[in-house]
Image (tube, rainbow, N blue to C red):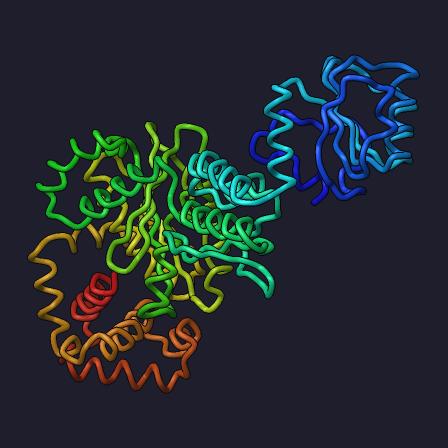
Length: 475
């Protein structure tokens, strides 16, 4: 063991390095000394704690004597901690490979802590576990700070990775997935302390912080607000206010879906995406972010007291792009898409923006880029308002029933092709370019849908009805 491994350990927080190397000489023990003239007889590798004032040339002589004796370091106790150190002392400490330290703490406690650490054994191991139990929990949920706190307690480097041969390791699964901590293994009680602290640290690193419970509660309530009938959602508003969910503010909603992932892979990505998004998008101003899982998608709400306007939409689209980039690093094989709803106010406005984000998501999947915003002033909004009524939904289902009976996997490509064909004024070539299909495939699909629903696409009224029905259903 060297001095560098000792610093910051249990009971040694007050020990501060002033000059010289802390890893040059193996540490063998500690000695309290009251007379400077005895320093030349210090044992090799000893850390000498000097309880008498020493300055000027006498300090130069003391450093020379300790260097000649092969001591590990000198702890000064009777000088102000911010007193300037003479340049000669700095040079002698570096050249003689002697560390100069300072403490203004309890000398008896310092000597006992150094002796216990150097000797090792059960007492030192227990003290290190006790120090970890005191320092690690307050930084739970922050893996980097957890690793740093565990390093200080153990006196060895603790890293955020799986262990390699000759190392000890521990892992735990949390909202962000599995978290590993590793550190050099040691024999005997010291090794048991390493393994115990790693286990504690892994649990703390993987868990959410202490204030994460309200965050999760808000997420659960947000999911409920978006899923229940309108009247029930209004009643849930009071619960949202009690939990700190800003239901009365203006909201912009983002809907994120990994298009190419299914099953367990999709679940794992979405499980980790919420906490990651809240950390990435955290704002120090009036903007509040919340996250929820709804219908196998990640829903994010950006809320603020005033109408965000065009600047708010631009900022949200930029945030969406940053989020997708961060998520792709975790799931590089996922085809991630994001739809952004327009700004609306209150509980019902939150639900409206969420519906619009869902509509915009279909636009992002249709060749408009990975992030698409709802067309608040165009056809999509009018269609959404119209399609919210039961009568409109029934009319669309009745018109498209023969196609919908084929099942989603066959019906959706047919309807998407027909919509593109109608949107491009009956041009198979332009529809094929948009959908990345051969024009013959477009013609074949359009003919098939026309035969199934029995509509005359040359008739303007029937053509408009089919076009609106395709758009509304695919929303």
